[in-house]
Image (tube, rainbow, N blue to C red; front, side):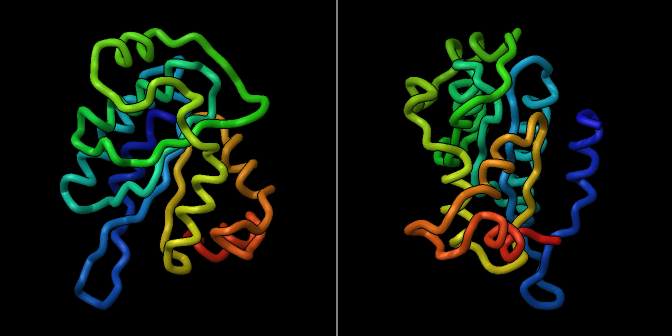
Length: 175
């Protein structure tokens, strides 16, 4: 199923604000960025879709605990000329797996993050991003564990939204 994700993303219809005016798909991407290279491939596809104006990348998050994964994702975003895409990390218990590439990419390519500790909690980042979006306008995609999505659903109201996480997702994410 992971291998089919880029193909599925290509088939996503662009939403439209008004008939005849296609708008890019507003997307939050969550990944484990650990064992398999499907994550790197999906990031490359998302950036290509963003370059074509078909996707707007709102935020990205890491669902695994590998300490090199956030730095690797930041390096990939920097390489694809989007160093300002906000990146969050999972807080609390989560899966950790050795990566054959995350450390090498993080060491070889420039990035802003110095460590995973420099990134915000992904669930809280997603709350902030969703609160700023129009109702039913966001697509959320995960390649890996859905820990951050689960954590988002369990959040309570905060300074970004008076809604609990589940209600915020219900209102802001496309059905």
